[in-house]
Length: 316
Image 1 (cartoon, rainbow, N blue to C red):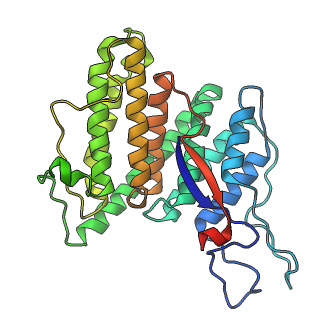
Image 2 (image 1 turned 90 degrees about the vertical axis):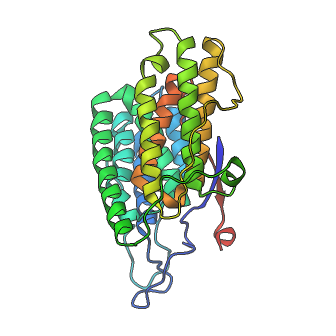
Image 3 (image 1 turned 180 degrees about the horizontal axis):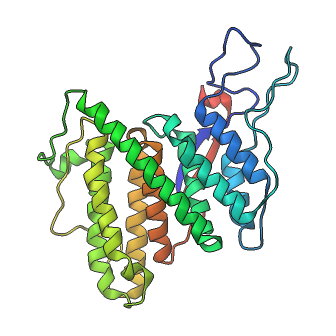
């Protein structure tokens, strides 16, 4: 797993703005702060079953506790979200994922650290929901697809007005790639993953989920290659290569699955690095696609990032 650090919105609410027309002890929560509180309350109200207990516990630990206004305010203030009624496991997982999708447009054009963790929890919730309630999982992914289209439409409109179009014909040398935009590194990781799927699938049984879905996954990777350059105006698009050096060479079924898992892990690492240029809805969509692909390669993960919670003082 990658290590992700973010500051929880605790009683100190470090980094939140203070309005002069309210009690100075009461911070003005941002949209992502409010979303984090809502997801925390959903998870706290969710009754886990035997198959989801560990995952829901991991999700709750990553998100942190609900946020409550400071004590001693001159005028009592309600929490940013009410406590929901109790949820069964599938209901709670669906609510947590759907809340991220619904809130994504208000989170801006960048996926900040707290939003990364919330997206990771949403992706994990969707993985489990696919088993518990496939129809609900499909419905949420449909809503996510709509949110992605909206985010990309807005991004293209912003870029068209900037007067700085992307040059998709420029290809940096391997040495230049080390200094390239994080989105360029994400594109390279997508090229490598495509290469892995092409080499690995021939070593898998015809009924292997990873082989059955390899063409769809390659199409998704090509979608990343096409979309990533549109998310910023300074992305030099790297070209692919006839062959890539792989950490795990696919020679048989087990090594083929290991190579796929390694490629997906590398892709997610690059997605993490490019988070500040990827809208939240797009970030979740690509993270969810990779999480499902890794699962098909016998690599189910509740979370893709390890969360190192930081104090308000460390957040500055």
